[in-house]
Length: 283
Image (cartoon, rainbow, N blue to C red):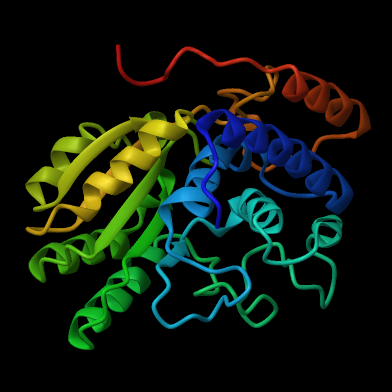
């Protein structure tokens, strides 16, 4: 794909966020907070970070992208449509029976997906297995796994963390959507995760932290991860759930709630005029 400037990618992010609102409104269900919060990560991945070919999605040497927290798939679907994997009109069929864009990613319907996701906590184990087999087959592609912070409550996630470190899977990069909410409440009220960075370091991972809405930071962190050969790398992406829509931002009530017509109109208007927010991480 032809590389775009950061400014162009930011404009694509705005278009994608509008699509996310329209998709969830049309479907009548979905997870707007996490979907809006991870748009910039998906834009960075598909337009810059990944070695991939939308016209040849099963290219054997492509980088693999696993989405563990499959409920935020509207943002991934929208970015895939914008980058040429399928026609844009398919977005308005989200979750319809037999259509390619199911409510959780299903590779039976959309073969360009690497896995079918749904049960939280499974993605890192799947990605670790792919990275491990790539090493056995002497393949040079990289495996990326996107996870939520809430699914860190799952024990099988931490088993995969140990497996990846034990086997020094330096061809594996995990990106955590650190948005601090899950379906019931804020993560630190449900099951405190901090100090998250220190936990990963103790488990033998290299740790990078970024503003999850700074596309340039995301791209640079992924590039740095490729240069780390001692162990797997985790990128903690600090995001704002519902980013771009004031009444959704940092509100756990929008974790799994579809907007009505009035909500959607207000949200789209805000997204069209949105400017940069103060970074949730950094200075």
